[in-house]
Image (cartoon, rainbow, N blue to C red; front, side, top):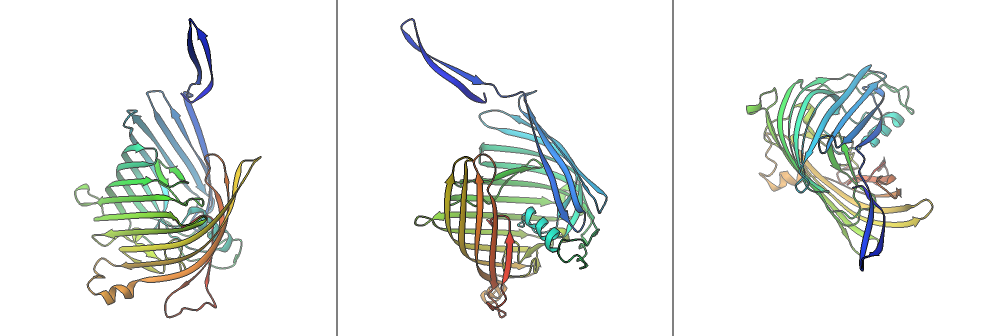
Length: 403
């Protein structure tokens, strides 16, 4: 059932009887969302998507989305179905087909930050490529905030070209071209485990993938993800590598509104990666203060340490939480190629580590309900290298928390 409408106790035959009125779950639950993006490959991209959860054969969900790039004249689409089994031990099976635009390399930059940077400032932060194919998966969800996902993907990768130089600022500036990729067919098997124990959580389901992402109000708990990918080999295709990654974030309250937060992440490959899967370090949500994607490689280690002061005020009519934060942080990371030996010598390893320090502040609004907080943050960061100087630090405007 969906909810309890009313309840009462009445006496019959010398006994107290409780009568409960419940509201049944609807047979079908539709949902929709807009698609609004901007980048130098597609220009303005508009579209829409939707989900339809039904109880026709128990519990299933149908998904579909379509979008169009006005400068590139390219259509993207995605459609699939997911079927749930068993109530006590939830298990889901799903399959989809698609033609999508994906981002090369960097998985740590929020889509809102990328769109803002491209449309307003004209920044060419990211590179894009096209992928189309099919995917099938099995998901086990022991709790609402943890899952184990096994998926098989068969898709092709192709190049995309820049189609516009427009931006609100720097309109006459010719933007950087879109980098080429290693075209080919990818066939891989991936296993992903994730859990989230934070006091304030944010999650979104995109293309049947559940993503736990940063929440401005989080002060306590853990968020983690571990994944293994086997590409090529017995599965065929044009790429051949195994890939391992993890991300662990811990949020620790100190005294009152003071908090200490840390994130450790790693990405490792046992072979050279194709260009569209190369890892990068610098800017974005990796090591702030450095130019975006300044360093590249096949393997990466990342550490973000943050002291954070948070102040919240609860308002009524409407029910919202208003808040602001102050923070200071230390970012450190190292990146290297497949044939390098970064741990053979301690001096070589320390030379590869890139570090930066900085301060930041943010304001946020959290409407009570299922929506995530809306936030705006400004951060000032400076690399700790030979060019260190507080006279010209990097200034970062972001629409979400880094972790």
